[in-house]
Amino acid sequence: MRPVIVAANWKMNTTPADAGELAAMIASRTREPDVVRVICPPFVCLAAVRDALAGEDVAVGAQNIHHELYGAYTGEVSAPMLAGLATWAIVGHSERRRDAAETDELIGRKVGRAIDAALRPILCVGEQLAERDAGRAIEVVARQLEGALGGRDPEGLVDGGLVIAYEPVWAIGTGRNARGIDAAEMAAAIRSTVARLGWGDAAAEGLPVLYGGSVTSANMGEFLEEPSIDGALVGGASLKPDEMAGIVGRAGMTARARRAGTEMR
Ligand code: PGA
Image 1 (cartoon, helix red, strand yellow):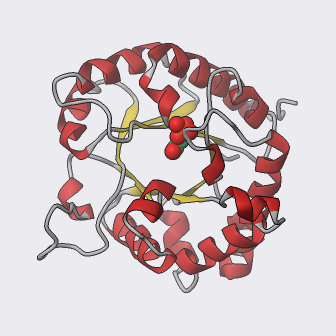
Image 2 (cartoon, helix red, strand yellow):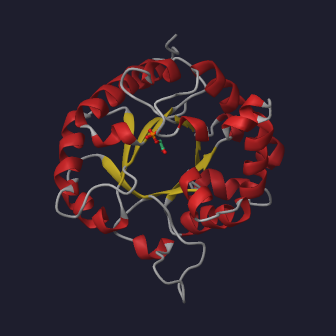
């Protein structure tokens, strides 16, 4: 049985002065014991959020890590530096692919660095609108996965708790979400791609796949109705406690149903 996960990506929002209060409010409004909750604030807010979440069952994640361990990389933060601050890390977000020209090869190295530092990686993949319109979405995402994960020891990736977030680029921050049925098709394609990369069918079947892209409390159900989707990576709505309460509440329904052995339809 795969876990149900809701990860909040706060992006470049909040300050050390206000992040703790927001995190505490979200934690108290989303208490669902069967849902794995993760909050990913900016680096400078990690300590405040960690402190605010003391005693809550909510994990803290970074939004990025560097692909090297230390050295002359001005302005960067490496995975080992996050010890005591975070236990998860987003890697390969499309905004970093776009703004920092991150390649699949580089992103794959970040996945390895995250796991070596005991950070659970959320690897983001997703196609551009033109690629979907051209019928190439699955091919593009498969290439991203092969580029980042090909040649990496499947056992290490499974043991390191790798999670994939399928985030179609055209759906991020646009208010235009993918259809549940398309996200489900992609989740199946993601698992068959990693199976081809040497994972084997059982490990591939156990890989958690989240959807991301304009997720709200109103559309969360459309994704979780798909048995192949295991939760969401939430951007804009994750800054709103009301929205997070609705999103995690809906996730709790699916998580309980899974635990009871019946997929929600
Ligand atoms: P969004 O962002 O929910 O604001 O579309 C999702 C993401 O970028 O992870």
